[in-house]
Image (tube, rainbow, N blue to C red; front, side, top):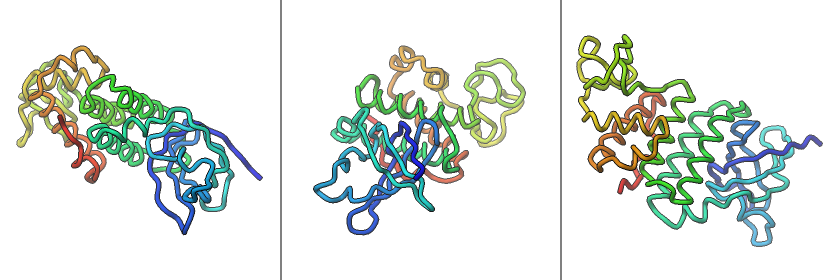
Length: 243
């Protein structure tokens, strides 16, 4: 009987049979794992409530033939309780966990940086440390950067010419100079590009000092950058409450 133990964030759950659930986890050491939690939908279940989305848990699993089996769960941080009570936090967190799942498509492939980014972002949401929209956009940018798709917000993404520049093109990698600017490039406000740079680097004083119009424009560029590299729409992103 092969067992292993790991820390994990619950990404999502769905029903299996009459009493079980399939739990999708992002673990610290084993990457994304799909496992069966037997009997968790029964009222007598000892750990059903611990396996709710956004929760940080210490989990023990038994290696199965197709899906692993969860045998023990201890709550580390019940982020879902705080996040679930606020619609803007909930929709932001839902977009985060969907992104984490899309960016870790290979099961059991270690992704420690993605795991730590997600834990930090969920903690910031649950504790209301920063505005939810800024936390979400910062997480999306940084998770894409870890995946190898970091945009440029200052120097030209094509030729490296020092910025700042006034054009932005997702397919070209971000900010572009006048010589490299392709047709269809957008022209965001300079303050918007400054905000995006602050969100990518984690400069929260600068990010929180931004105007709402710049936050709205930045969110649109982040969404476009995410959709381009994932090559599909993020279903949960359309429901995010941007206030």
